[in-house]
Length: 163
Image (cartoon, rainbow, N blue to C red):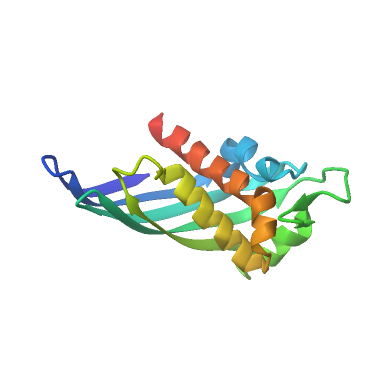
């Protein structure tokens, strides 16, 4: 993990870059596919994430990229197991590129003083939309569980970073 940047304490304005590389997906397993109702367990892979965050006048703008490397899932024993309304193994295979990576770009934007704004919820929604877009799933499919999956990833990363 790396972190760098600057912050003006009086105004809370800042510009930072946070990077995670090679985090074992097994560490995050309880938060991944199971949150979307999939029964299959994650059996291997790593996660990389980079975020460039700018805060000015209590507004955050943070574009980033999440990459799942060599994601492997076990057999759930249930042929009807789905992720975003698509059979889990098929969904994972469809998302992977030739390098066996699943890449999702996202941008977090919001007012940090707005009590309705949540960084983890915003990240969850952005990543859910990225998964759905990559798979060609409708917004209704996203509402059925993808938000829980990526919210879990965000929560797991928050827990990992706070240790």
